[in-house]
Image (cartoon, rainbow, N blue to C red; front, side):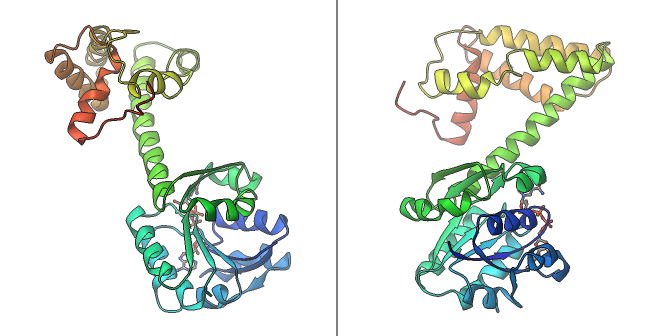
Length: 301
Ligand code: NAD
């Protein structure tokens, strides 16, 4: 069992720290709102007056703070963790923050013999309470395996994504994709309901069809995009272009603005102009790969 310090006892950090304590670790806590620590102090945790004092009393220091500004100030600022951490201590940031910042912190801490992991979480407040979070970790592999038993008290899906910063990058990609997907679903559902489908029936149709079954992530990316297999056609691009065109036409009939659908339609038009109509509809990935200057191939295909 370790001496664990926890800074930031908010909606996520509060219950995560309680779960670390429940796993049997000795806890030191702090927050700019002292009242946030009441449940932890009631259960025997110690209070520290500053991140520096907390780090002096801890082998592993966690932060769960709003964002980069607070992380930078607590990790590097006056009275911060770096001023109190002993050589051999470990700092783990659970916040959703900046990959560039955690890489800078890692570099500065390394000179002082303090190890760093980034480990943003996914699963919301219910997941933080129940200990059922995904924890996306970036950092040294041996360090990851050393700290994993403590992370297992926070989440049930703890995974190392890569070197320092990679957990944060994966988390930011996830939240960006989630935001865009929800906006596209909002467009689709307002279209469907305005054109006459009941909301529950539409949701059921979406849930039980290809997209709702998770086929993009489970099948299309590993089977088509990763091996670069765009000429084995499951669903031709020209058919997808037809369907998105019919949907935006329906949107015009019912006066439903659909910005994301319009953008998708224009991208499909560009793919068609390139002569990709008879290729698989996942050729739309090729357009973005070209713009980004990167290929999503694993070389295993
Ligand atoms: P929150 O605002 O509830 O908690 C942040 C805590 O940090 C607060 O208790 C605040 O008082 C404390 N704090 C702020 N500045 C501080 C400082 N300088 N020193 C000490 N304590 C300080 O936020 P949250 O919802 O718990 O989110 C924490 C992090 O987790 C964020 O990065 C967020 O993006 C991420 N996250 C949140 C959720 C969610 O559903 N809420 C889900 C996944 C990830």
